[in-house]
Length: 112
Image (cartoon, rainbow, N blue to C red; front, side, top):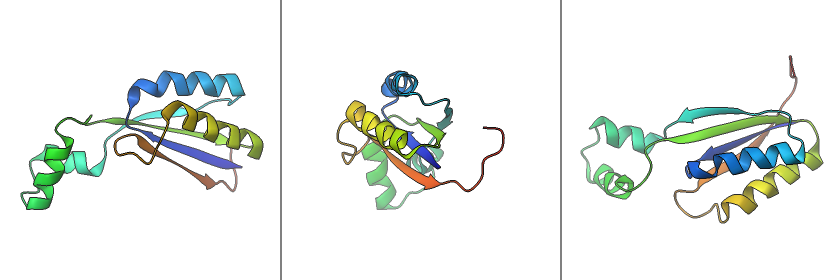
């Protein structure tokens, strides 16, 4: 059993991901509004060093907020299908600004 986390910067793909989850049989997911550290620092007005200026310049055209999706998936095959489906929707996740995805093992779940 694993939890799949997706930090989605390109939030216009949220509905596509959720539709895909329904199609493949994922029973549920939680979606949180979130914000990355770089965005939080630059939007707070703190961070006057040159490094933060570079981040601020990079983020000027970026979305300040993102979505964090997580779901507990019991079956390894369904987990692999969910990961591949998200990759198919988002394309190359190594490009800046797309987001990130990772899994973590889950020991015990109550109320699933």
